[in-house]
Structure formats: C-alpha cells, structure tokens
Length: 113
Length: 112
Image (tube, rainbow over all chains, first blue to last red):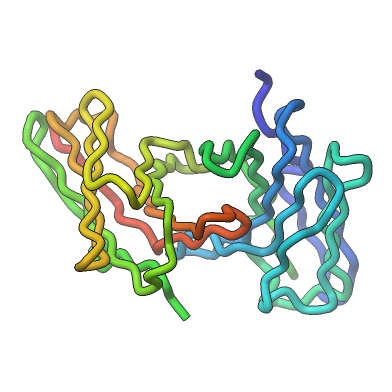
C-alpha cells in the first residue's frame, strides 16, 4: 500500500493558463474522488469516479473543469483559463468500496498569480 | 449550502482530559458519517466512522456518537494526547457513497 499519490505538489501559474493535476490512487481502489479545499474550509466535493465512469459531478464544477480516469487507473483534473478564485488545495481520495473510508493524497496546491 | 457544520473553529484541552468535538448536519438522508484528522501539509487521515443504524462506535481512545433525531454527531477522545493536536473534520454521505460533505473543521490543541 503505497498510498494515494498526487502530482505536482505545488503549481504556480498565471491567470488564464491551463493546468492539469494527476492522481494515482491505491492500486486496487475502484472509487476515486476529487475535492477542493480553501483556507479555513473543509474539503469540497468536486467529482467521483467508479472505475473509468464519472458518476457524480458537483454543480459547483464549472465547464472550465474537466476530469478523466482512463482505464480506471490514474485520474487527471484539468482547469482551463484559470481564475484567481481557483487558487486552492486540490485533494484526491480513493476507496475500495463506498462503505470503506477514503484514503487521501497530500494534495496539489494551486496558486494563481 | 453547508449541509455539515462544525461550529467550533478551535478547541483547547489539557493533556489527559477528554476532547469533545461536535458536528451537526441538515440532510436526513445522510447514512454514513466519518471523522478525519489533518496535519499541516498532509491530506486528511481517516479516524473513525459510524453508520446510521448505530448510535455509537468505539476504537481505542476514539468514540463517535450519533444522535439522528438531533442530526448531531460528536467525537470523544479520551485521554487526549499532544499528538492529537490537529484539525478534525466530520463528513457525511448518503447510502450510495457517491458524494461526501465535509464540515469546516475544528482545530484541536492538546496542551502538555
């Protein structure tokens, strides 16, 4: 069990640029979640995959955000035309079954200049 | 639309005493509740969970209580240790586990 891995740990970019984050879940976990966390708040749900299928997506997720999980393995979260309000910690979590707790990665911190 | 609320941003407790962290929720469809602990620069780490069919779950020094009628859960840590100092989040989900809602966290400081 190598844990959930997220890359990069920190991303600094200029407003208007596109960014992509990667999450490698624990290998046998078929459930994968993305969250966003801002200062002083708890993780905010963004989207959920079961294997390669994206089954749930937050209404807060604008069309600038897209996530994929090809072949049900790693996942990517892309933000197009970044805005100041996108600055946050982006967390990925995985679990084997819904009733089992999620294992979180250490997150990718996005800073928009 | 904050469906899970932690109204105490911080809590300070003396080592050896009990820490009680509280969490309220608004959605009666929530079926599964969890507590996570988070240290700076790390992702949240699972502590303990409870399903709606139970009113108590215990794991070592950690006990979670669920009061469904009041839509309230609490986490008891006994005895508290300095290493317990962290931010604690409660979370909730419906029975399909497709979406989890987190509270805003309570920062616990356990003083030696």
